[in-house]
Amino acid sequence: MGSIKIFADSTCDLHAEWITKYDIGIVPLYVTFSEQTYKDGVDLSVPELYRKVDETGKLPKTAAPSPADFIQAFAPYAQEGQRILYISLSSELSSTYQNALIAAEEFTEGTVTVFDSLNLSTGIGLQVMKAVGAAAEGKSVEEIVHMLTAVRSQVETEFVIDSLDYLYKGGRCSGMQNIVGSLLRIRPVIKVEGGKMTPAYKIRGSREKALDQLLDNALSRLPEMDNDLIFVTHSLADEDAKMLKEALESKTNARLVAVSNAGCVISSHCGAKTIGILYTKKLA
Image (cartoon, rainbow, N blue to C red; front, side, top):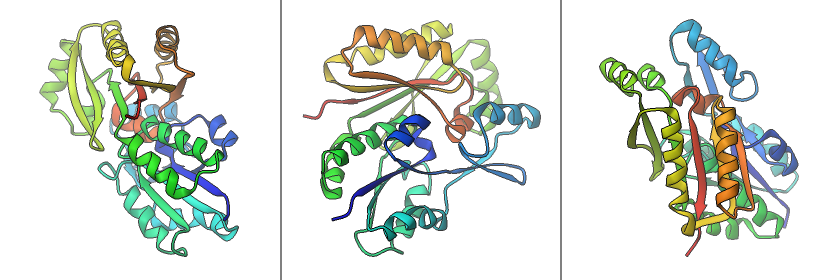
């Protein structure tokens, strides 16, 4: 049996160093401003994204990789006799998963396995790293998928959005809600449940208060928390991410607390200074 090649897409928000070190294949999504289309994380950086939004006053459109994109990415490894396991952005949020399934049909049966993470950002990345570890232990694709099926329902994904501006530009709140929310300094908290982004609650007041609440929510789950890997993922909020990382390191017994930068697709939906804590709960 050939080796296993793990794939994800650009929304997994894993460090470039990890992607290289663990030989993870990445298929980028697309970000489009007017007539110009960029590959997420390849042709466009997050600071450039925000500059373009400021210049145009409009959010870009985002799009899934096409089946052809997936075929092109998978083909060299399939030709070498490797089995491919692709862990996708939630099927509830994008057609990425479906396009990968279409691509998989172009290969010999069993060559490409597509797994729906039912998550986003490093909620995907957590699952990718679990798969990487299992593959290194010699687990089969079927065994890894069985493990991931149990793990994905245990992933906790919670983000604080700093401003309602991007939700307003994206049509997710009204102009009046944006004005009132800004005046009252309301920061929405987004969770991922059932593969969908869900407004969990709102925090009114300072950013410090919001960050404290985010941290307290995570620490309240400490007895349930898998102590292998915790992510602090953010969009241009380096100092806050550093603070949360240090707090989690001191208050948990996690093997690793990693800081990760959200890519262009994730950032285009949430805006600058969005920050989240992501981890998995222990399996029963």
